[in-house]
Length: 273
Image 1: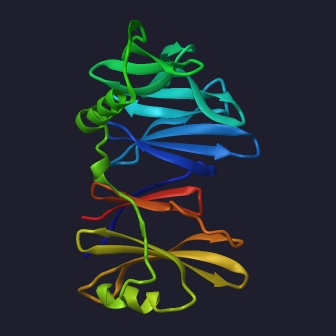
Image 2: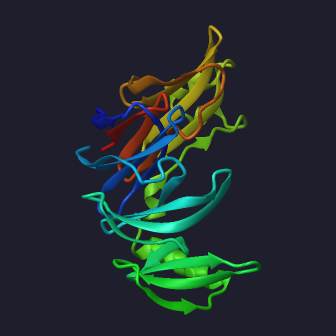
Image 3: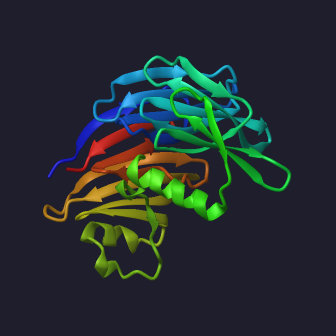
């Protein structure tokens, strides 16, 4: 078996967040801490072909994405730079970057069956509003409790969104696990006492394994994928090198693809089948 690289991407900024859209879009949020700017790059998930490059809102740093769905990106701003609360809804056409509609009074929750579920935060409760998905026109104010909101959100993810079950995220390897349960190549590495913070994803019969080691005053994060048939590695590379900090959340699996963030700035995708 051989791993097939699909594509790599970088805009030379720190990759902050990755989202998948319902129409096979890959959305990469990257940030430049020096210039205090955030950029949004949208690619075709299968080919890496750009759809929208280095898009920015008028608020160039204190903004982020709520959801990518049916050709629309829903953005938010922050109530205050030092507070995480989201405010406002800005709907952008994913192909052109043009604004479709915006609402500065409400905050975004989710969308379902052609409606955006939004809210206004009052002193002691939330006031819920339904907006038209494509126009932003307010349809009605609704009374909903937390259980009803959570059920609607789960239905939206299950029936209309990117299914969470198609993701696989790393599991931190317990010190109590027996090396005999691991492929020989990983078992040999794992029994090395110098290894730190080991993670893995089991995808069908493939172990995607990450570990950290100290060398010459620096910390190196390695990622390996052993081939249990040949005894060799299908993939073996250094994905992070730091002055001592461990870098979590550097890889995950979506559907049949390994999504890998290397050195915080390069995104690489491999086909696992």
